[in-house]
Structures are given as C-alpha cells and as structure tokens.
Amino acid sequence: MTVSPYKIKAVGNARYEFISCGPKGEVKKIVEISALKPAGLFNVAFGDIRSDGTIDDMAVTNNNDLVKVFATVIEIIGDFLLSNPFAILFFQGSSEQRTTIYHYILRRYHKLFSEKFIITAMVKVGEIATEMSFDPYYREAYLAFLVRRKL
Amino acid sequence: MSAKKNDNSGRLASLGIVKKKINHTSFPKKIERANKLLEKAVLLKTKEIQTN
Image 1 (cartoon, rainbow over the protein chains, first blue to last red):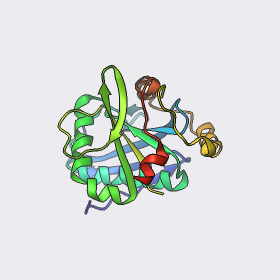
Image 2: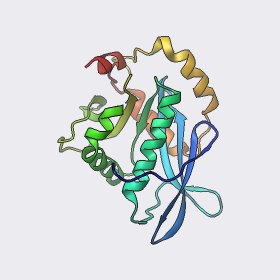
Image 3: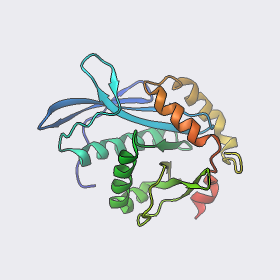
Image 4: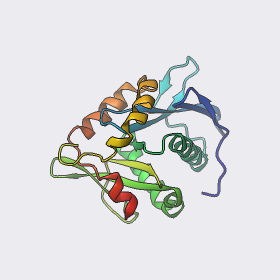
C-alpha cells in the first residue's frame, strides 16, 4: 500500500480515531477493538462518528479515500498486534457487500499484508463456519477474516 | 470452536488482562453477530499457522 495512513489518535487502549479528508469534507472515523467470546479473539469494528457523537457503522462516506482509510485501519491493526502479539483479530463487513470490499482489498494487497500478518478467512462448510488460509484467488464470498501477527 | 480449540491457552492470561480492559463496545450488534458466527466455528491452530 503506497498511500500513507491518516494520523491516528488512540483513545484508551482499544479505540482509535482519525479524520478522513476528501470531497465530502472531514469525516471523523472510529476503529474499535473489542473482546469476543472465544478467548484470544478480538473484533475490529469500524464506523463514522456522527456530529452528535453516536456511531454509524453502515455509513457510505464516498470520500474518495478508501485506500487511505484502509491503510489507516491496517496501521491500527499493526499497533494493536504489537501490544498484543498473541491476539487474533476478527473482522467482517457490516454487510455482504462490505465483506466483499474487504476481500478485494486483502486480495490486492495480500503480498504486502503477508509480510507482517497472517491472514485467514472464514468460509461456510455445510452449516459450520470454518477458518482456512486466505486465498487471494478464491472466487466465493468469505464470511469474515482473521489477522494474526507473524511471530 | 467446538471441533478444535485455539492452542493459545498458555498465553491467555495476558490476553485476559486485555479482555477485561476492552469489554465495552460501541458496536454491540457487530459483536453479537461475530460471537454468533464464532460460536460453532472451527478455527485453525495458531501454532500450526505460524509454522506453515
């Protein structure tokens, strides 16, 4: 990813904020990492902060900075995994379409991401969600993605 | 995680500390959805992934 990330403001140890800048103006974004029930797994959630302080995780900002926003999210993931090297980060789009966008970005930058992280993905096998290695050329829809730090 | 469990058990103490600190969320629906997906999921063992 040749684009530099936005400046990140850490709020506590698992909440990060940054400002997206583009044709739609400045949009405050949040990335929050929260513990999931399976021990060791943490969810990465992402959304816009509305002017009243509430969070919109379905927002379509169209600020022409998707790659820069993702570069920022990757930076945040790296920061979290540096402090928590054995954590497994889980992320899933708020819709199938968003998960497909994440798949596209992971496919495009897979080689670069693989230098620091191990990317895997969840697929449905029968009725069971099953983790498998991320295949950039996989043509079916993934359910979600998991990221570990390379040790 | 019914069929296979993570092999991070020796390291979970430190993660437990993190977990306590970040159990609040602004995205409760996402967390609920993720937990539901992972409830019966089969996950790979971290040790195997790291060595491959």
